[in-house]
Image (cartoon, rainbow, N blue to C red):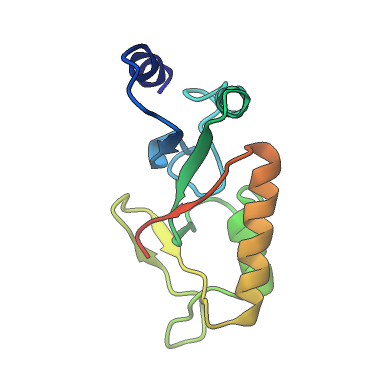
Length: 138
């Protein structure tokens, strides 16, 4: 990403927003970033802000359900609030997206989901000061 940023700036192409797809996430999990391959992402975003640019990451409504309980807060909090879409037995509907991993989806008809979604974004914003959100696969 830094190489693309530098090439674009060097070529003097108008450029005011850096977008990121899910490759910047840790194992494609919402509200995370890959601390190995994107270790300096928070500093990069701060540098963007310092020169008047914006940063907008992608988010998917699907939340990974493949991690053990207690290891992925977006899944844990959703389970605690009981806000995921249910199957016919009243349990969270487990589906799969293109990653092939078990996935659950917040039920946006449940008023608690707004609280959940807002808290997830607010918490992640403290870690990575993004300026907007690209909600994909909705």
